[in-house]
Image (cartoon, rainbow, N blue to C red; front, side, top):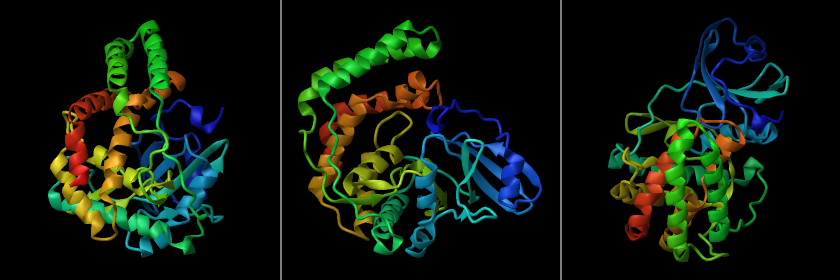
Length: 340
């Protein structure tokens, strides 16, 4: 069974004692599952050596994650707050055993505020992401020279066909999730068809890119008061558009409980980013249109639900649908917020 197809479990790893030995943790005092992790399994671990966050990798190449963790000392030197990874007794940042891969980071106490954050916090968040982009651009890190990545623009016909496939699976299902998904998927098909003419053109660009964190969202930012205490989960460091990372981060961070984007916070967020590095307004507007279309055209959570038997992202499917319904009605306002 490959890493990315295992059903997730909240139970501690069966090889927990071996992990404790590999990381020289001493006696284990407490092991507690952390529910906020979506793609991988996470636990709080308190041991004689201290308090740590343990991650079981289920959807990332351990070699890539090992490389990413190896960047963090220099990233921290550039002013980005991190949770430092722990090396095993043999110096490995990712420990592989019995077909499983794990890593351990120092535990950072803090909170994960959402759209209720203050304007000052939004501005600080933008500045931190700018420092991440600056830090990852340092050639001393040894990352490959980033090559341009074309913005993928889903085809409307393919998007409708995929959504219809998921609709068929939901209709054939028997549980409450299936029954709740059916009307949502029918509505999504109508939305795609009605707004296909607004999708970005194939080959459109969203401006300069380079190495990015890849997953800047509220559960990967640990706050203490008005400051980010640690940026965590560097599993998805990748080459991408800077504008797209900013739009994605804002759409996650400023999504309110009723699934709309708190648009005034975007201005403060971009002010913070621009206090460190520049970003073109036109690129941001183009990235906002692309992000809208990508959410509308692909129900990625259903790949997990029906393809992997993993229900950990089920709630995000319904949240994203509420968000994209609101976003579609307010498309011009959202783009004006990024273009302001």
